[in-house]
Every structure is written in C-alpha cells, then in structure tokens.
Length: 178
Image (cartoon, rainbow, N blue to C red; front, side, top):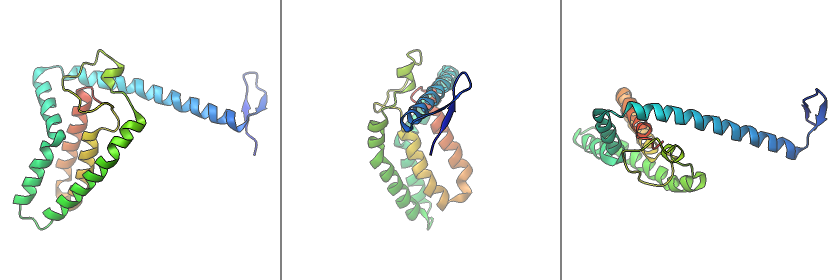
C-alpha cells in the first residue's frame, strides 16, 4: 500500500518504506529529546528545593530506606504481626523483587541512560550512586515489585504503601539520580 506525504509546496509525493521509518525514528528521537529536557527541568527544580540541610537529611534517609532498610523493617514487622498472610506476602514480595533484579542489569546495560547529573553537571548529587546508569531505577523497581504483593495481601495499607513508594521515587529525583 502507498503512503503520501505533503511536501512544502503542497505537492503529494510517494514515500518509501525506508523513508517512513526514518521519519518515524526522527519523531521518536525528538520526543525523547523533549522528554529529557522536561526531565532535567523537573530534576533541577526538585534538587534545588532539596538544598536545605533538613531536606537533604530526609532525602538521604528515604534513599537509605529504598536501598534495603525498608524491606528489612517491613519483613520483621510482617513476621512479628502473626498475620496468616505474612508468609505468603513475604514470599511473593521476595520472588517479585528477585525476578525484577534478574532483568534489572540487563535493561541497564541495554538502555545505558545517563543520570541527570551526568547530563547537567550543575546537578551535583549529594548521595553516591550504586551503579552506572539511570534506567531503570532499582529503588523504584524494587519498591514496586514489593508493593504489589504487599497491597494484595494487605489492601487496607494501600495509602501507606503509595506514600512510601512516592517518597522513594521523589528521593531519587531530589538527589539528581533519576
């Protein structure tokens, strides 16, 4: 089937499949470029807002929790709760996190997306990064993988889980890692 494109002078011209693919690729590249510029504005704003020492401490604490402290705390809380659902939720959360971390390094190496502070040197991070690339965020990926079985087992805690998840995501942005 044939595709036509309007030219600058209003004529219609047949375009080959190869040209259509090139045009689509250019649109996608432009879209990603615009998204990256918007991302840098958002990260820059959040990083600037977190310059206060109290906010930096809060951000460091949130990032520490997202690095593993939260999951240890949640596992202990579930185990001492004597809930009949605790073991199932712990197993499901562990399996989900394990599966996510199995593909995590593959995606990082495939995408190789630079962190915002690497693309904009004025965004100095105040927390050391754990690995090279920005995407996917291991903190947010783990929080999501664990949150889903947790909310499934304890739907009454969905508000708390969403707030904690959002704080982890914000913490990664505020320290200019994502």
